[in-house]
Length: 133
Image (cartoon, rainbow, N blue to C red; front, side, top):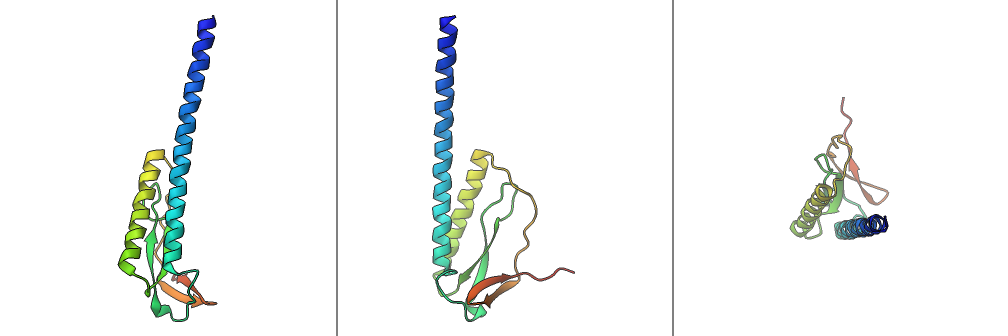
């Protein structure tokens, strides 16, 4: 009987320690994704450059939903290094897709329609969505 208790306790410790490693690893990967996203937001100048002329702004899809498609869209200033910025967005989107697959993340499957443009509202770049009849 003592052997069964010992095996049960040993198995429980092994199981929970493995689970904690996975949880810790998942949390670490999530923090890395968050850092990547925050860097993208910073580089986009969406929060640190006043929007006066909508023609100086554009937008791109960002992120990867577990069931496919982007998680949203982000405006960015055309005054930045656009190719470098779009590469960072692509890297983030690919990393999020890999994270979703690795950890079995689930999401809603609705399709997020792209905006039709960017406008300046109260000095902030704002995505515009047309009304679909």
